[in-house]
Image (cartoon, rainbow, N blue to C red):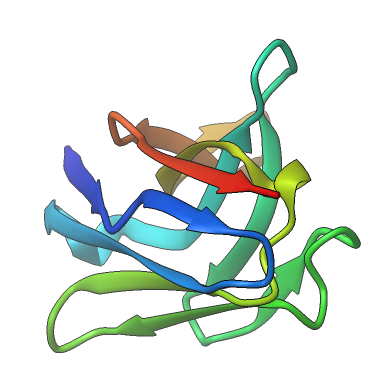
Length: 124
């Protein structure tokens, strides 16, 4: 079991910045990746950014160049630094932890643990 708790959301004007944090606890050695997802009002949840065990990162096209994912392994904390925020970034942001799951003949790194979310609201 892995527990994740997000913090750092809030309201900001377009062009501003916010930094989200995600504190992880539990069986952290089993975690193969972590990610930030978001769910805008009335839309489906989407992947914003992810980071692998060795630090490889990926970003949604909509946030490339504006958002930066990072982690502090000593503090067991994941971060998402968001700059040049746009109104379309308004969403509930979720932290997720992935663990290896045995599927037929292979291990898959799957997102199994989710936080409660933190709201980010960007106004024009």
